[in-house]
Length: 236
Image (tube, rainbow, N blue to C red; front, side, top):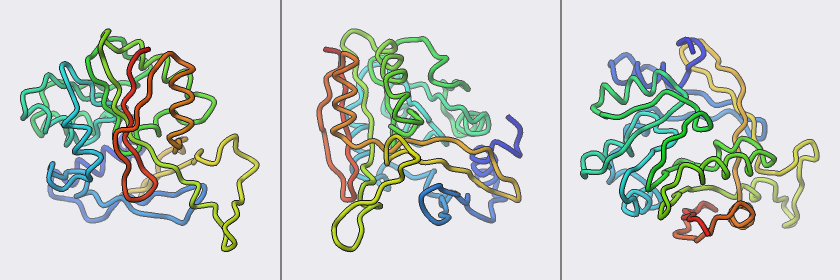
């Protein structure tokens, strides 16, 4: 993936190199353009929301940080003596996390990875990697295959139903999608725009239903302040 399409990696690299002059612009299929402040991706444990802090504190054994990005979660775990590996589809992000000191990194899609772990960590709307509602089974089956016998999946998500609520308390839904939490994004940075990609916001009840369907027990660990949650999945 070249720098012109690896938007995320390019922005992280520029920030780390001191040449960052703008934030990533996110173009969404359901909302106005928004921005990702690059400094936030380099946050310390103390700057992380409660859900992320709790997830890190619940990690055990050998950890795979899925969608590790700049490596902030992985580096905290490494600093606290965990055997942690970061995996990301952004080559720039993987390279940057190595520069920051992360010892174990993998540039790959999670679906192409086959090693097993005690903890799979999926944060910053971890359900997003499922892409679409009809791919949840595929991802959960694969994530389960990456677990050691007593392993766990720590994943956060958000229910975005509130975005479709009208003034009368009713809901309007996009009939062109199979589920209201399906969003298509594009990201722009430095005059370049990356390819579109699908991202899934999955409500907790549906996550629990799909988990059980795929032989996983789902427990609600923590609820956030804005329709977000942390869940722990283990094999039945």
